[in-house]
Structure formats: C-alpha cells, structure tokens
Image (cartoon, rainbow, N blue to C red; front, side, top):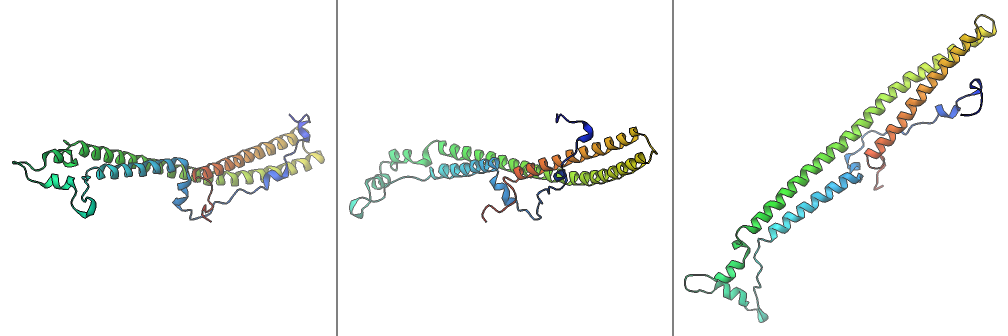
Length: 218
C-alpha cells in the first residue's frame, strides 16, 4: 500500500503516546436526560399524564352560575327548580355524571395509556443503563488487554534487539532476525487493534451518556 519494502516500514511513534479520555468517577444518572430516546419516552409519559388530567376534568359539570348583576343564572335556576317528580331532567341529562359511562371510560383509557407510557419509559431507562454498563465493562476489559499487549510489545522489542546483536556477531541467521521483526510487528498490530477498540468503546460510552460526561448546565 505504501509502495515501500516491508523492511523499511515503521509505525509512527505518536500511535503509542495519544492518551485516551479519562472517565471520571461519580457520574450522575441525570446525564442520561440528554439521550434522545429517553427524552422522547419522557415526553410521551408527560403527555399521557396530561391526558389523564383532561379526562378527569371532563367529569366536572360546566355551568354558568351567575347572570348579569350577580344573580343566579338561568342554567342554575332551571336545574334546581322543582317539577312534577323530576329535578331538571333535561339539564341533568346533559351533565357529565349522567353520560352513560362515556367519561368514565375516557378516564380509564387515559390511565391505561399512562401506565403503558410509564412502562415504556422504565424499559427505555433500563436499556440506557445497560448501554452505559456495557461500554464501561468493555473499557475495563480493554484496559487489561492493553496492558498485556504493552508488555508483549516491550518483550518483542527486547527480543528483536537481542536477535539483531546476535545476527551482527554472526551467531544467528538472517531468518531468525526477520522472524523476531515479524513477531514485534505482530504484537504492535495487536496493541493497535486494542487501542482502536478502546477509542470505539469510549465513543460508545459518550453516546450512551447522551454526549459525554461534562455538566450540560455548567
């Protein structure tokens, strides 16, 4: 790919010095509020709560109590006046208390929607927590792998130096020297793969937190 012999290829030194972002301790769960999926679930929950309030408010009779001058309105007077053996039958039938259960069914439906939205929000919140935990677990495991690979790279480098000295003194063949170089490159490649996985897991953690661990209100 580079158009150069493999013996001339060297990895850049900066590949081993770039530091990963440090994840601070004590991150609050409030950071998850920035996640779009949780924000949407929370909005749906609040909307369902509002619908329950609207449905319950529909039970309350709507009457005009006073007329001009502060006297009783005609609606109030007609509702309370006596008649044969009934009590404002026409107006009573129009009140929410006598609607055949329609408003009660509306309240029950709104409460059922609220319960469904509440369950959906809890499920989404648990998924967000799992997402964060998975990324933190991956970072911890990759940290251990990175340390092991660093030791392997150091050991391979020492072996290469020893093989080079032995080759220059005529104690080993060039084949053994090339094999030592191949082993060192293989260990460096494995270390770079782990480093790449660490960056990917860090990005995944930032995404899981909804945008990093800085305080959005600061």
